[in-house]
Length: 53
Image 1 (cartoon, rainbow, N blue to C red):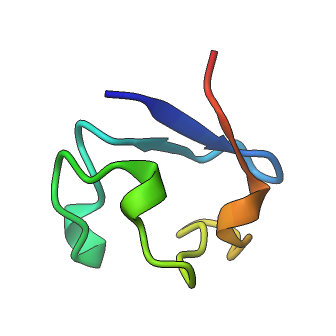
Image 2: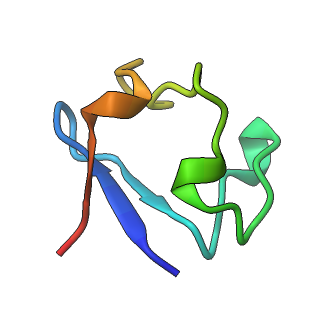
């Protein structure tokens, strides 16, 4: 499973963990997140995330 980082604030979305508090189940791939997904910390859109190294 991959991880993606918000380019604006550094929040890391981990596909293995998901975001249970926001209704996103563990194992949800980043590309499968809704198009209106936003960073839970800063509100940046999905396009503001990059794959983590």
